[in-house]
Amino acid sequence: MARRYVLAAVGTLGAVVLVLAIWMIVDVLRVRAALNDARTQANDLTEQFKVVGPGGENQIAAQLGRDITKARKITEGPMWSLGEKLPLLGGDFQVVAEAASAIEDVANVGVPGLTKLSTERDNGALSVKDGRVDLSVIRRLTPILQDSDRVFTEGRRKFRAIDLTVAHGPVRSALAKVQDKLFEAQEAVSKGADALERAPEMLGADGPRSYLLVFQNNAELRSTGGIPGAFVELTANNGALIIKRQGEGSSTGFFDPPAVAVTNDEQALYGKLIANYWVDANFTPDFPRTAQILRAMYRSKYKKDLDGVVSLDPVALARILRATGPVQVRPNVALSSENVIGVLLNAVYTEYPEDDDAQNLFFAQAAKKIFEAFTTGSADSGELIKELQASLQEGRVIVNATKPEEQALFAGSKLAGELPVDTGATPNVGLYLNDSSASKLDFYMRRQTTVKATRCDADKVQTFRVTTTMKSEAPRRVTDLGPGVVGFSSGSKKGHMSTVLTWYAPLGGRVTALNIDGRQVSVNRAKHKGLFVATASIDLAPGKRTSIVATIKSGPGQQKDGVFRTTPGVEVTPNYVKIDSAC
Image (cartoon, rainbow, N blue to C red):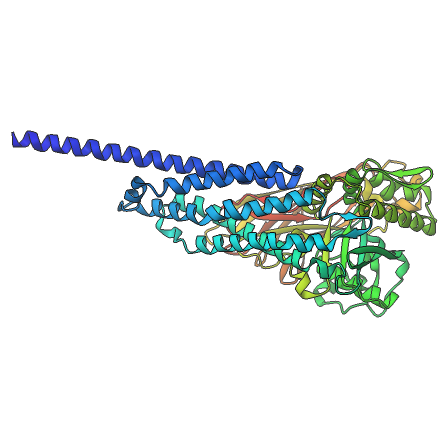
């Protein structure tokens, strides 16, 4: 009889445990579903910031807050408290509850502030109208972003205090990804708040500011895009933007001695030309260095100190024209998003093959008309933001401020165009191109690069295979295009694309092999800012194609997903591309 009672008691206890276990599992699944819904809403919210007009993101932000609150309330229930006391799984329950609590205010307070700012932005509050940015609007919106910054920063502090090591692998890994995204968002919001606070000063609230707007010409490649061709000096005075000077880079002459001291690394890779000629200042992929060189050249030539340098290319201009609509440059010439690339990078040189003055005049007229369209306020604000973000993602819009405290606002972002050096566990791989023929034949270049991590060694060294195909689509009778396109070279190479490719390995890594069209070639090695660099020269006749494979190893401890950066060309060029880790 006693044995029967014992068995009954055990059976009853087992049933209770089973019910409790099922209840806990249901709670876990409910929390996971709520957090997954929140993640989906967060992703949708990000896309809304990028691609839609005002209003749409507010509904998504509200749903995001509800999902996070739902998850947090479940973790406050009795079964969840019991789960936290379990000897094996208690840590998982604990950290999930702490994570939901840490990000609740971010979702319910911080994000709605961002959506309010986004709505104002998309309604044109931050746009240039009648040649002026309304500084009073910036001052009104700054506290909103600062409040969001405080909430995001507090959420980051709370999340950082969570001991993720007490959770099991899958839970720890999932929450680590949430943590990375939260930290990334907090840094962006914090920088945005600082930038908005400083914007009035940078736009001339405390006195006129001078900025150099440079247009890179991708028909003659340089590491950051193309030769710095036409330029505009802009004055910002209490929000008003005025063109003070226009010119062409080639007209600045030869700087001897060099405009700045050339480092040993630069001398070995690029020679002194990087500081002798305006159009060679961006041989280097490090735009802050390019901006420093251009400022020095501008000071020497025009006796003017600049407060910053901004770079755009014709692909970015085409995207701006999608938002502004076409501009009439001359009575018989209109530039639109459909034709501006072909006109500026090719037709001008065939129309005026040996007349530099005529080319420069057209570039100046085009730059002025596009600037006027941009600053009148006629552009669709949502479309303009979307197009500028697309150009930013491809590295076609770059900004460098002269004052270190202002440049710090852009540091580490795509907008800065920096050469990535020490990026921790994230390996950065670079491939940059420089034309060596002084022609405009790169208008006809078709290029594609893929990067794959193929191996992860025990010390977290990754191996990458970088495969690039290049083809010249120049017409076979290329010399008929004239010297404005094919350049002034002679002999059998006339009309050939001549390009120097430069591969940058991650810090502590190296380029181990180069293969061109199935043939192993020796690696020309160099160093730049502590990074291992390899170069190769490629010659392409019209209609010809080549394939180059570089094998690159990362440094030790670089086990995270990598980033691939390259020179933006005439066509859409994927840039800052994620490389899935092999570790």
